[in-house]
Amino acid sequence: LLDNAGKYSAEDGTVTLSLRRQDNRHCLLSVRNEGESIPAEELENLFKRFYRADPSRKRDGSFGLGLSIAENIVTNHKGKIWAESREGYNTFHVLLPTQST
Image 1 (tube, rainbow, N blue to C red):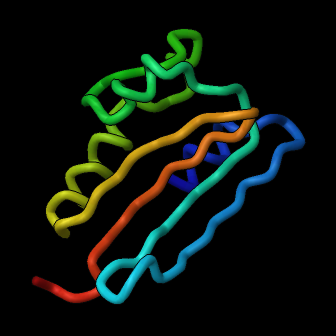
Image 2: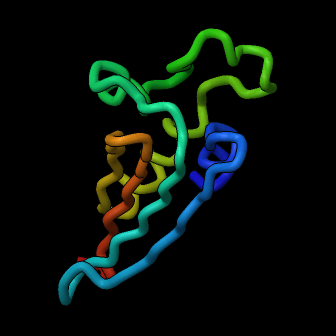
């Protein structure tokens, strides 16, 4: 998530990482960057294997697997991952249980 945030951030944009307790059983990791907004229809597809939101970035050395792998890791740890995009900020959230259930 950090690698993607850096890659797709605006040239002079910032990347912010936060980790906080969500409730007594969960923690929330958020990675936020300033950059071009991701259209809502693309947000739904970001975690699909080999999906590339911007076809012009095909030469950046990635294969469109990172977010799919992240989703599998989070799911295997009984968590949830999702993305939001609004007002020039893209945020990826990971909600994980703090204890195994």
